[in-house]
Length: 240
Ligand SMILES: Nc1ncnc2c1ncn2[C@@H]1O[C@H](COP(=O)(O)OP(=O)(O)OP(=O)(O)O)[C@@H](O)[C@H]1O
Ligand SMILES: [Mg+2]
Image (cartoon, rainbow, N blue to C red; front, side, top):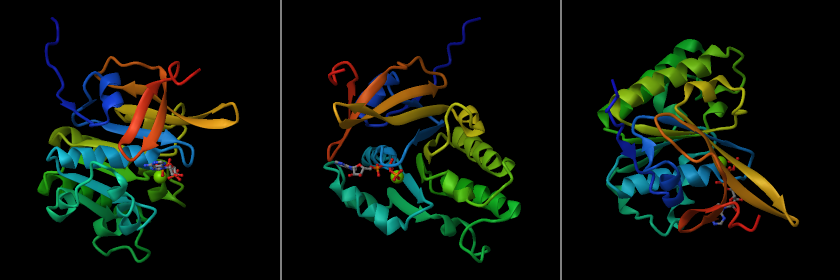
């Protein structure tokens, strides 16, 4: 029998991306955004959060490397950003230590118990604050110095389950090699940002490697990071 259930879409608000994905990311999905340094991962993820908040969806940005203030400072550069989003609590920036109950001396999780508590506390926050968009920038830095591979996988599974159940859609900024990492296999979607050299210039590119429940283009696109957000153009029109 034909499955007629249609997954609702989370409209990212990033115009070109929404059309590549046939209307947006399936609601409740966890998507990895991977790529080399400086390629635009944070810009794309922040636009996703700010656009969502502007549409009235409560958005949480969890920073794991830099202080939230530092990331917040780059947000007003977006033409579509309104300070009221943060004042009203629709757009919130928090850091890792905010989810550790003060239990970790270093301010970072170290034991498997602290990692489980981190997963539980993020899940609780999503539930209690009705979070509809989650950005973690960046996912892998949470696990610096951790040798046990099951820890990142278990946290991803915990988040993935909560988000699916609560219809919260997430972008995890990651530096994983998308072709081999277990995170890429577990996650619902993978978007790769890259660089392409053209006549001594370095173009930024974007490619959707996978997006479950979605028939999408796998073509490479050229992206421009602008104050209007990420602009996406087919590679051929980018002059190649
Ligand atoms: N609105 C913008 N207009 C033009 N350039 C921008 C804009 N936003 C960011 N950039 C440029 O993009 C570069 C990096 O963007 P971004 O921080 O999103 O990349 P990233 O992949 O997250 O990098 P990292 O791996 O270091 O975290 C910066 O060097 C900055 O100059
Ligand atoms: Mg970044």
